Image (cartoon, rainbow, N blue to C red; front, side, top):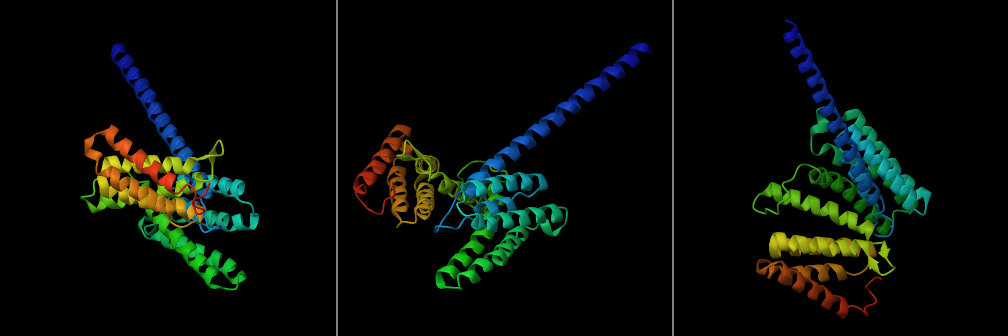
Amino acid sequence: MKSGLKERLASLKAGETGGVGVLRRRDASRIAEGAVRFVIAFILAGSRILTDMSPFAVGFTAAAGTPVAAMASLAGALTGYLLTSTAFVWALKYISMCVIVCTATLIFHETEIFSKRWFMPVFTSFVAACLGSVAAFDAGWTIPAAVCFSADVVLTGGCAYFYKIALSPWSGRFNLEHSAEIIHTVSVLILIATMLISLAQYHIAGIISVGRALAVLVVLLAGYKGGVSMGCATGVAVGLAMDAAASHPPIFCMAYGLAALVAGVFAKQGRLIFSVMYILLNACVAGVSLDSPHVPG
């Protein structure tokens, strides 16, 4: 009798200990996820194209999916916009978008319509259109203002759509035989490219751009793992992101794409040959364009 009671007490204690361990692991994973989302949103808030457009952190906040993730993304976006902006009025527009989008996640996350893949991208574009129209009216609806307004609306909703896919579980393989894998690969590439836009403005020793150095490594990995087609696509996409960040003609687009194209031919010859060819091609392009006025420092 006593031995049976002791066994039951021991099993209950073991169950409680195991339950606490599971809860601790869940809390740790949630904290880690929140920290990662905070950092990504912070980086995306510093990504600017066409001089003063920065819709990427808004789209990332909209792609959170859960209230906790949305608040972590909101905190990162607010911190990023406030620290990287030179004009508070400019930052206030995107901060307002992030707050509204996060509030919508808190309100609608338990409804059926929120589970629809199109809901948050459409809602985010609507918010961007409402708030962006104020700046467009202030500029007199000139052609440049209308183009920037349209691009802001489309990019905000588009980023919300593709970031959501990029953050969903992924095999990590560059399998281009299935449409779902293609969409996921493209979505991850979009997230990486938009983050590199922000990192491109930071330099090591005033010479080496952090974003462009990482872009070279991303294209190198994509070309080696995915071959010529994946390497070229990644090189062009990442190059366009670097060109958009610098507001210059498509120098990096051609450089990364060409290097990935030629080096991809040697992808099956081994890592060493592939890496050497890739580095040589990038060095040749850098040497030829060294005196070009369109290449940013």
